[in-house]
Length: 305
Ligand code: COA
Ligand code: ZN
Image 1 (cartoon, rainbow, N blue to C red):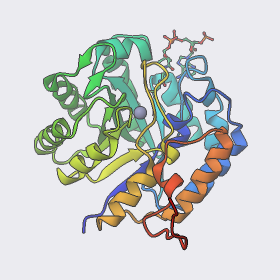
Image 2: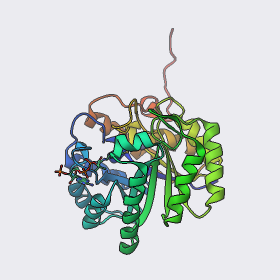
Image 3: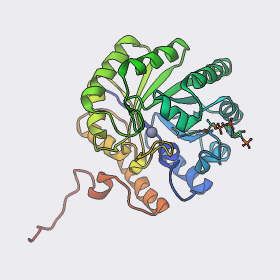
Image 4: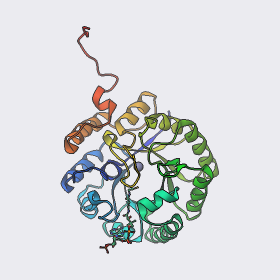
């Protein structure tokens, strides 16, 4: 059965909108445990403006503090050249650039037009190539935007073509506020992969409308082998109204493993980390598997009604 690569985003997408600051040492401890769970990549933090994302103002300290476990790629989100320079100074395996397919969301999130973002990111890509750092770009609002509606597929394809031409290694097609449906996912995954078969494709779903795992299933059936997901289902962009959590890592792994896909993930360790995460954020997490346990959890009592 097919190998599927899981990429953790909890300490970046997951934490960025949390209301209470999570101490640097807790972030480091969590990443160090997750590094032994079988991930292909961990998105550790973002080198964004600390005014825009105060939760991740400790990006340098976190990157310097974590263990780098061989076999795991440590990536970071980068919005501009300043962020790229900061990331280079601490050493990262990959720059994960970000821009939105929706003009409105790009203005809200990055305070510039898509054209200005693309120009600035062109300089960042050149810097990455010179510095021999791999480049991925996350295209936010690829399926829909909470301010401008469903995203026309030709606009998404335009930006995909643009960044493939610029020589990025990978592209993440991101459903920032859970507006994608499985049929749309199938069409877009087929189109993107057939046009650019050598690009490393990632699908990044949020479960805002309960379609997250259905979308992941549609994507894997369309040939996608990389997924972003967040422990406990935490997550959401603070500059996208109505945003909620990413698809939940332990739910995704639980489903894919049961279906026979090879994720090479340690699900028991994920569940332990998710239980600790619930304590760290001090509220219930939207993780059904954390609540119910894996399918092999058996009860020795007969329920009396
Ligand atoms: N790292 C640290 N500081 C940065 C920075 C970076 N990458 N980019 C800009 N800054 C600082 C500037 O030095 C300036 O600081 P000052 O006010 O002390 O002089 C301040 O931020 C404003 O700079 P400016 O270039 O005018 O940026 P902006 O205010 O228009 O913000 C972004 C642009 C892209 C930096 C900001 O919107 C951002 O970080 N957005 C990230 C959003 C995000 O991560 N969303 C969730 C993920 S999808
Ligand atoms: Zn996201």
